[in-house]
Structure formats: C-alpha cells, structure tokens
Image (cartoon, rainbow, N blue to C red; front, side, top):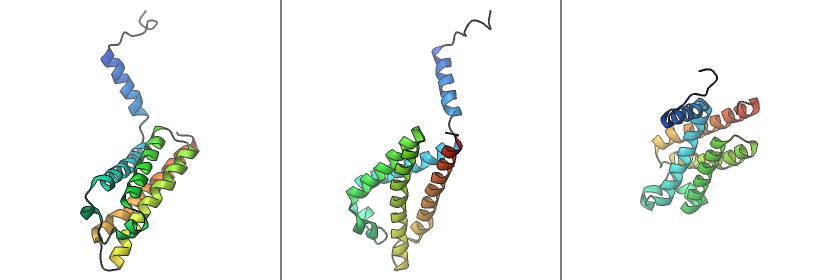
Length: 153
C-alpha cells in the first residue's frame, strides 16, 4: 500500500523538495554567470548614485570622455539584466546580447585604467584587478557557450 499511495508531505517538506530540485540545477557555469550579473548591477548602481568626486579621476577620465555617467550606468544595468536573463535560460540570442554589452563595457574600463597608469596617473591596483575581471567575464562567456553547444543547458 505504501508503494501505491502518494506520500503525504507537509508544506515544509514540499518546499524543501522544491529548493532541492532548484539547487540540483545550479552549476558552476550559473555561479560564474551570477558573479558577472552581480558585478554589472553593482557597477550600474555605483555609476548612478556615487558622488562624482569619487568616480571621476585620472583612471576613469578616458571612459567618461567617451560617454557620460548616465550612459555608463545604463550600459552596466543592461549588462546585468542581460546576464540575469541568460542565467534564467541559456539561448543563443541572450548570449549574444549579454556578451556584446558586458565584455565591451568592462574592457573600456580596464583599458581606461591601463591608459591612465601608462601616462603616470591612475591606480596600479585597479590595473591589477580590472583586466582579470574582463578575463573572468570572457571565460564565463566561453563556458556558457560550451554548455549551450553541448546541450547541457
């Protein structure tokens, strides 16, 4: 009789099973993509709400010469939202949209830091950290593409 009748689960047990199913679908690829999304959303928030004197300096001036703060904030917000959409479901279109927004935005900021340091200004620590962030995002793009192409997602 126990093998025929469905179990009588409490609400807590059903909730636990739902979380368990969700957690079993979480992969390293999704973790990497979540980091990219978080970086972009935090960057958008910072660009939108931080005081100008904390943002505009020798290291960031080339980026702000290219586009004003509100445009950068929207670009980073788009990168974060595209990353979240891709996190929700892997598709080819979502991948193209995400990486066409996220990688160039990060590359410009890393490049801005490189230019500033080469010209005697800027932050050497930013030069140490920003290029690896771009490399991590590029690696995430490759891993997501490979998962998508292999049929894992």
